[in-house]
Image (tube, rainbow, N blue to C red; front, side):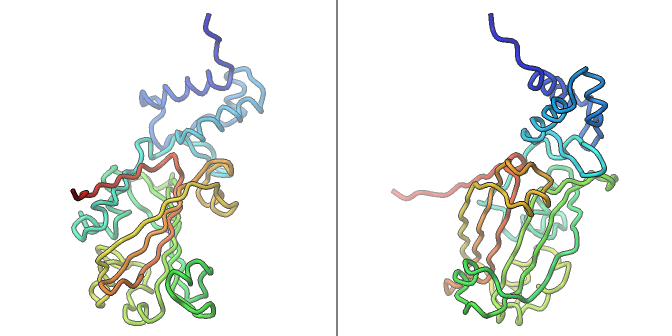
Length: 263
């Protein structure tokens, strides 16, 4: 006879089934850990493990001090790098950049937090890629990127962290990069208008554990892996004019690429 699943996977599967059927809709609150403990007649730690398993599956998220909720992103965000940076895609429906456009296609709303904008020394890896002296200050745009449901901003879920770096001379010629809202099409459109059009892109992807700060910002368990995408935007002369580091929960994103191969 097949072995009966343990309490944790059995109870988690029951909650997951209710989420799939829409009994628990995206963004809806779930019972607290003590309430789940009482309802299932289980130990407090067992109840925590049930929610931990569902969180690791990307079905729920917890906001410290506010409770546990069904994830807003039950279908993964499709990041199709083959087309996401085309001008028409970045500004589709009035979107401010590729991320905003992707979120709109899921029927969700990107509710940006204030962007941290500063001129400071980048990490050595970034400085090396941008060809900067270690003491040179570059322009940084650092974002925590949550999404909400249309008409309901009470519950939000962070699905990406992004830090973009721009060489100082590029930033000097493109002052809109130091504004909170860079306008339709985002930074790439403003750079093109300033004479720094990106004609070639290169991305490197790494799967790694999050830092403590990243796990806290993304509201994910410290043991849950993240995807880090190093995105390089190169101008016609081969110079990197924008370097972006995107950190994303592995449970929330699907990456797609397509290219033509020669004979």
